[in-house]
Image (tube, rainbow, N blue to C red):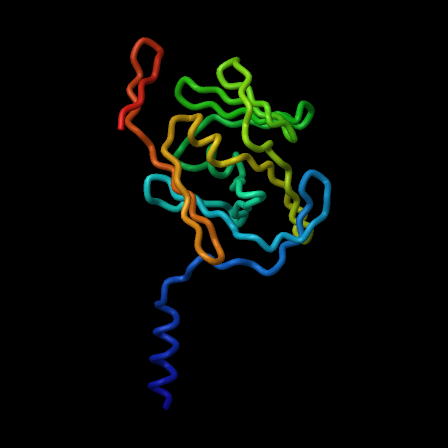
Length: 178
C-alpha cells in the first residue's frame, strides 16, 4: 500500500499543470466593483509563455485584455512602454510604430493619426491584493505593432499567441516579412 501511495504522489507531482480558472475574482474595472468569473488570458510569444506576473488577462465582451507593461514591455516583445497617470495615457512603441491610448477611450493615436479601436483600455484593481493594472486590448496592440495574433479558448482559459515577423530596418523604416 505504501508503494502505491508513493507512486500516486509521484504521478501527480509529475503531471503537467494547466492554467485553471480561479473562483470569482473581486475586481474593480474603471472604479466599478464586480465579480469576474470569466476566462483568464495567458500569452505566448513565439511559442514561449509570457510571464504575466501572477496577473493573467481577462476577457470582457469578447475582447482579451492584458497588462500593457507585463506583456508588451517586460516580455521578449521588448516594446518601450509608459503610462501617465495624470493624462491617463498608455504609450507603446516598437520599431516604427507608436501607439498612444487613453483609459476609457476607443480612440488611439498611431504614428500621429487617430484610429478607432474596438474597445478602450481599462484599469483593473484586484480587490483582495489591491494590485492595480492598466489593461489594453491585446489583439489591437499586437496587430498594430505588426505581430500575428491568434487566440485559442478552452473551457477555462484563453491562450493568445503573438508571433513575430522578420523585421528589417533600412533608412529608418521597418519592413515586415512573413
